[in-house]
Length: 189
Length: 265
Image 1 (cartoon, rainbow over the protein chains, first blue to last red):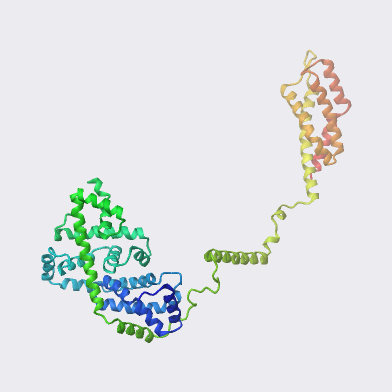
Image 2: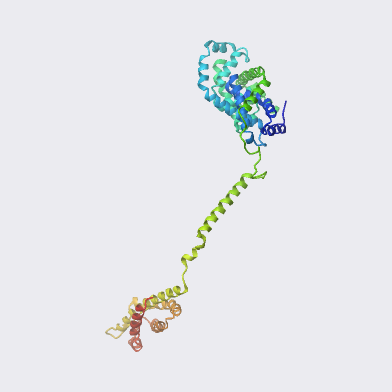
């Protein structure tokens, strides 16, 4: 279901007056997009669901701060992005421990499995690990573009930067990934 | 190779399908002729396919979640947390309703308020009542006394210098009977004639009639001296000396000087 700007505006008005059903409709419209963004940053289902809940709690608190002429989706995803980054930083140590516990066999599987099929779990795993190595903005842009399927324009709105900057950072992210993956995937850097 | 360097971002756009048909055709032709770029395109395609497959995997995760239950859970958590803090109505600024250039008008309003407050304090302290002109105010009486004092000093100076020239003239006489004024005295005579022109209005303004009369007599003598050549014949010299003596000019100068020195304002 695609909601127009006017529909969302009406729902927000009603929610700000304490209409529970209107707020639930807003959650229903946007929770999957918020989840995808949080999941692409955190890479963990339960963590992403926590961020979804926290994002809508923050939205409810900030309903009065929203200005009607702004793009609501971009504003909401901006809240989600900030909360995800906070969550990621707070739990960085825990994530590192989890990473170190991953077995050598798992990595070997990735190295053996990918060459024949780009959609193999091994290649996905190698790409996923290398995305983690990207700088924060490059990582966000790469995951929003390829994992969330957002357009450059939408990414620019979420991050509050120009479309040109988004394109430039995306190019750098791809170049870095290609350089890092080339020895494992048999590419020429 | 240099020709290919500028095409690197284009290769990514080509793989991502984010270019016009015409640009796409250009790149396709370039790839056909350039094996290095063709390899790079294949590598990028594999990389982005792998990334997109991550996206598909994510969407599978998405499909495994009961979103209706999740929405209810979120709303319940929000409602359980308590009432929303009260704030201003959304998108409404009661103090600046729907005006264009809001920030400019707000700045202008603040400027007017600050200016008004500053004026209030200035007027209350009475700072503006003390005009700068009052600091330099002088009464008419004071100014006339200043004029009088200036005229007195100028006259004294004129008399002093005239006295020297006239004394020199009265005492100069060579053995041959010819009298000759020094070059300094001649110059001084001319200088005193010019000075007298500026002294006249001052004396009139200060109402110093007696001083003006004596200064006029000295001026007449200096005019005669200036008209006669520097080297005076004994007869001319004697004539001027007699004039000085007959009119008691040196005595008058002395008396007037004394009087002026005593009448310092």
